[in-house]
Image 1 (cartoon, rainbow, N blue to C red):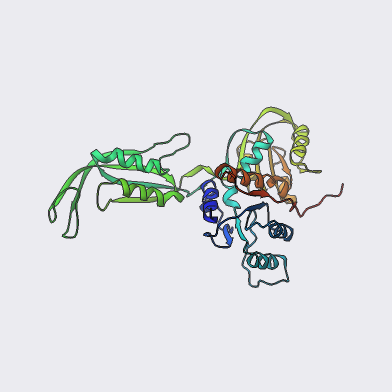
Image 2: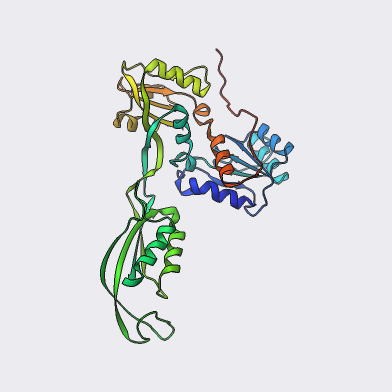
Length: 365
């Protein structure tokens, strides 16, 4: 098994195209063709985690937060990042990060947190746009079903809770094959008119290559005609945050006490109580202040996130309870999620979560 095999499994759930433009995700150090001995998983890569990998003979470390984030001008022993990079290279340890691509996946960080809290009927709080593409192709009528099934099998045609979605209309296609062609229908050098179907379907943009490959393989023509368009439509399965419903309403204080217990955190920062019960919960693991207004617009009773600035606590205006539960605390289940993804896809594979807590924030109670 190679690092590439591991990457393919993770990126099936969290493709790199889901990541924010400012982020740095994917294989940061190493060669994807390297054979994997064992994998160590952590929220971030600290010197303690690196030493654990060296001592345990791990040759791949998977983290949520990327070790290399902004531009690095020097790699030396004067700072922790430089020391970690040097150790990784010297010990032939690859480093991979799944950050905002895993945040923005509907099966990622926020879903994991929502499950722990017990939220039901989950939807993405702020869906991303420009993550869908449309394919249009032109096929002889008798071959339309075969081509349609091919790109459905490649992942096209899913809209919300529906699959095998397409639209077709009949028309006539014209073409003339030159002397180098081997036409499926018609004759070389003669203009030909063929009854065809125009077929349209949509798919997540990251599947473009495999959908087109499936189309070309199934299409009877030597040179299939097709168009690809990027859509502005939002994709309900990709985006920031989660919103859903608690099984039973709770008063605000009881909800906060339960949240403290679930996250194993000694203290919570929150806005003033609204005096209403908590039923609809919005959340975003990590720094999610940019979603406060989205949670308000969708009438959430509470929004749970981290890294909230002082003045942001005024935004809800007593219409919603705003909770800062800590960056590490709201993302702490990510390592377990990554381990679950690997265990689901690879049997008898040596992968484990680091024994070190990487939380840089401490509390004096």
